[in-house]
Length: 69
Picture 1 (cartoon, rainbow, N blue to C red):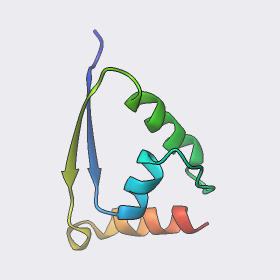
Picture 2 (picture 1 turned 90 degrees about the vertical axis):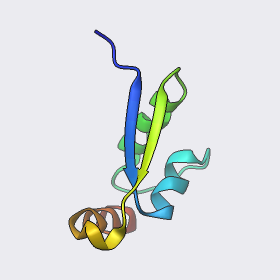
Picture 3 (picture 1 turned 180 degrees about the vertical axis):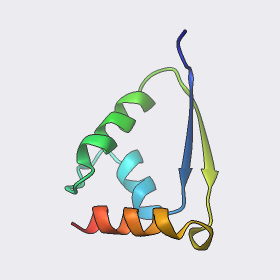
């Protein structure tokens, strides 16, 4: 069984820019960003959900830590 839908929860504009841009953003999650970009090139249903940063402090910490390194 193949999945044809990606649910993406993002609250950081820098993450959205890194995922949707054709430019290269050197960071510790570069491989993950490339994998997401690869998946977006196929016929997937991409559903994005906005997550308020204050409601998810753990994710905010992880994103800021990995994108700054």
